[in-house]
Amino acid sequence: MSEVARLDARREHINIETDDGNVHVIPIAVFRYIVAGKLTVNRVSDFIPIYREITKQWMRCKGLL
Image (cartoon, rainbow, N blue to C red; front, side):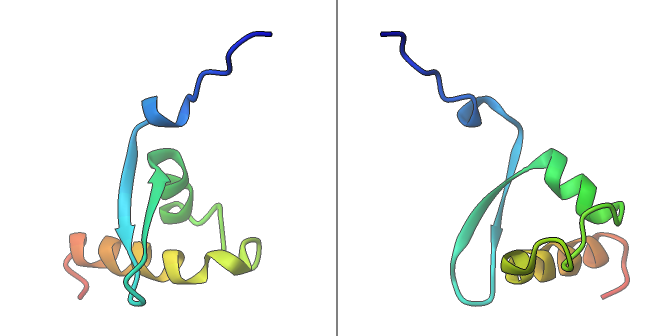
């Protein structure tokens, strides 16, 4: 039987800490999709705390917070 290689460890990612203290590892591609408005809370209701934190961090980077 072949071994399965974990590609997740090789992808560019960002760590997002949410207000509840959890830390989530998010691929940069997902972060960019959210910032571009292509991935919304409506599509990923379980993703709301992460989405909020990504939005806050992006607004800080843009000087809006």
